[in-house]
Amino acid sequence: MPSNVDICNRALSVIGTRSSIASMVEASPEARACTLHFEASCRAMLRLAPWSFARATVQGALLAAAPGTPENPNGTAPLPLVPINAANLAGTTPAQIVSWQYEYAWPQDCVRLRQVKYPFDQPQNAGTVAQLWPGVVNASALFPGMGGMSMESRAPYRIAMDKDASGNRIKVILSNIQNALIVYTCLVDNSELWDDEFSEAFVYALASHLVGALIGDKQMDRDLWAKAQALATQARAVDGNEQPLSPNHTPDWIRARGGMPVAGMFPYPMDDDE
Image (cartoon, rainbow, N blue to C red):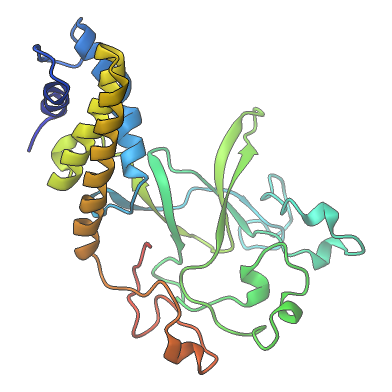
């Protein structure tokens, strides 16, 4: 598989430079440009789709738990963030406001969050509407007949900004799942681990950035970016064909019967990231 230096040299070749690099840390304009744009281009490409080669699952690192949970029975600070609209719910008491139960740390190498899942040792179908739609007062009244309905393993979550003990901003994940598993796209900046189609698309994406740094041809920049987008679309199709088939809409025959499909329940796959 091509190394990062190979990928950079392919991008340099695409824009027509006569020189190549032997290392990304060498003292040359080409190497400096490649180093400057490589990771940013990689992150942007990885966010485009739930690429199979970049899928990671980790145990969520708990930062805070709501009062009354097994992890925080006495309500000791820090506590999870309260829904931003909670202060505007006039006439309600704190007990009526359903907040998030758990706050997890954003994985350090996370580029795109895909899913928050129940751990393998907990039931996959747990939680009521009131529990799974935080910030909603009397959720059962808003969703008639659904108050006690069991939900699937793809429970809601929210990405938010909080502060650590030193007052620094940190990115967090809010959820109602105890011991949650975090499924995400990780930063895979080693090109030897990439799919071939992804590598090809990345070469043109990187080349579009190198044009501005080394040549300054704006039209070539636009053409290369368009080529990168087209190749990324093809790469997504190939990658998607390797994934389990899962519906992303409610089939007519289910809608007509007043039901709704639940990912993770038969006959739907249990590990859908879409």
